[in-house]
Image (tube, rainbow, N blue to C red):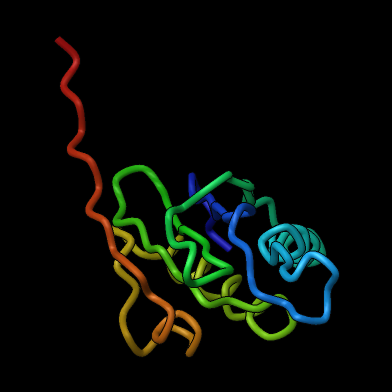
Length: 129
C-alpha cells in the first residue's frame, strides 16, 4: 500500500449501548483500533493507526478519520470490528493511492459509502516568509 503520510484516526471515546454489559455500554473504538493495527501489521504495512479521544460523532460509533497532508479528510462512522476492518484497510489503500484524497465512489467499500459523516477539505499550504 502506498501509505505516504496517511493516518487512520480512531475515536476511542464513543460509547455504544450494550444491554448485555453491566455498564450498559462498550467503547468499540478501542478494539477497532487494535484490530486495524493487527490487520495492517499482518500484511506488512506501516500505516499508522492513532487512537483519539473524540471525533465528535458520538451517535455513530465506531468512527474513524482518514487523513493526510494536502488531501481531503474523510470521517466514517457506524463501523464494526467484526465486519469492517478489511473494508477500512482497503479504503485507506485507495485513499493513500489518490492524489487529493478523494476516493472514487466505485472504489469505496459499502461501509465507506454508507458511513461517510463528512469530507473535509485540506488546509491550504502555508507559505514560508
